[in-house]
Amino acid sequence: MKKRTKYLVASLLLSFLTSPVLGADLLPVPAQTAVPAEPDRWTFSLSPYFWMAGLDGDSQVFGLPSVDVSQNFGDIFSDLDFAFMAAGEARYGRFSVFTDMSYVKLTTDAATPRGILADDISVKSTTFTALLAAAYSVYESDRDHLDILAGVRYWDAETRITLSGGLIGSLSGKDSANWVDGIVGIKGNYFLTDKVFATGWAMVGAGGADIDWDVLGGLGYQFNDTFSAILGYRAQGVDYSHGGFTYDMIQHGPIIGMNIKF
Image (cartoon, rainbow, N blue to C red; front, side, top):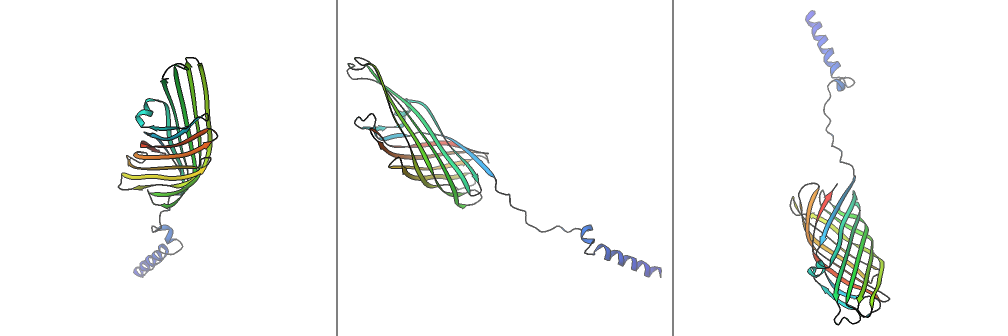
């Protein structure tokens, strides 16, 4: 009898522990559920760079005859007063906002051939450009992306000529123009290895200018999740003319920079 009672108690206890109501809580089985993907979040990047560009084209100020310009980077660098160049991006999922800014100030001094009307001539020129564009990724993987973009580029070009000495004594004049162009294009990154990637963009537009275009191609090396370095070649052209002011120029040359993500 006692033996039978022991079997009955053991049977009841086993049924209690394995019941759907309480057994599942006392003896949990790990659920085989997928780990949810990390939600989209904002990421930011800043890319200061130095563009070793030469300059070719035509320039006209004060309604004077146009001047053919052909300067390599060495010529420009010797006249360089100040330069600032940087690109930046804010990205959320497939959407992003992209900007690229450049400011260059040059001064050229020379003596006049005969020194009768003036002894010296000084030419100061400043050029500022700023691009603001919205982009959407038509292709995206863990590290690669190809974006289409649309935006506007603002231009501000100014030339100041100062004559001194001779019969004129001192005379200074300034001519300038600013305008906005609509821009469309593509940009992207593609990793060739775990560390090496190709990057670039191609844009074209018009508005204040007859045409405004910009092409960049380069290779980058990613040191870690935060820093990478980029070496490439960039060419940018614009053809603007209004009244007696003409700025029909192509800048082209090697570009070196870094990218900081945060």
